Length: 334
Image 1: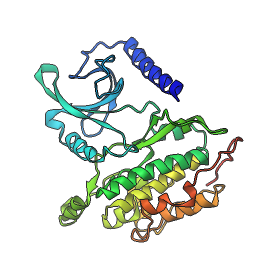
Image 2 (image 1 turned 90 degrees about the vertical axis):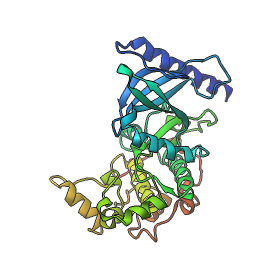
Image 3 (image 1 turned 30 degrees about the vertical axis):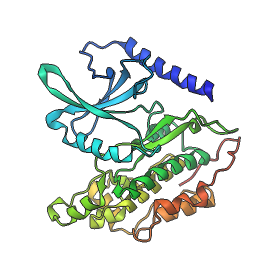
Image 4 (image 1 turned 180 degrees about the horizontal axis):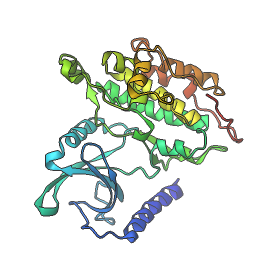
């Protein structure tokens, strides 16, 4: 375990050194405890995402890791980012949710005030990328482990009175876990923990009830292919929506393809109508275990009141740990 911990620390240092070696012509940003290393991507709602390193790598009294991720926006455009930081702060006690290290303001070009939020770095990328490179789906053993982690995070969020409302592979980040030992026959992905991120549209039960009182605020939020029937048909949001979306994520992990997608020539409106009013549920993949099939059936109950919640699903036989088969997994058919 100690060797793995040292290896992960060395890997983090190498990532920082590699990015620094690339060089960058623009001015390097930084805060009181961190220094920007590389721009990663443009985030949602006028935000930007960058990789950063700690300024004081040898100071063991600091509360930041060696490398981290900074999301930032100009102060005038940072309302959504500030709201995300506020919501994220309510879930810091859960290890299955990406960790937030706080926020601060810095001065940018031309004296502009920049609002920054510091997050845990997920060196394993996101679940969407892992599925894309899997070549047809992940081994069921890995799917179980990731599903359990996501459910533990959702159970914590729901018991706090919130719903995430945008569960999808891209919003599930993979963080190395130094305490995990790879079992015989397990794939490399079992060395990572799945953690929930991106609370852009998360809402409390009070906020959801308040929105229902204003018809002009009835709008679809989230990603269409992971939306539950009640979201489309009734504009009804809540924890049950996250469970339907989780089922879609599990299908995607198992077979490498979305549970729901537009048919050739189908418009987005027709696609949404099929989800909300067509009575259609995602097809259960062929070739998976009976436990996995039953688990998905519990997620894809169209009546949200009868859909299993996170606590019930955590006790489902599908999530029972077992020893992975050393042979390559069979291909899953849809």
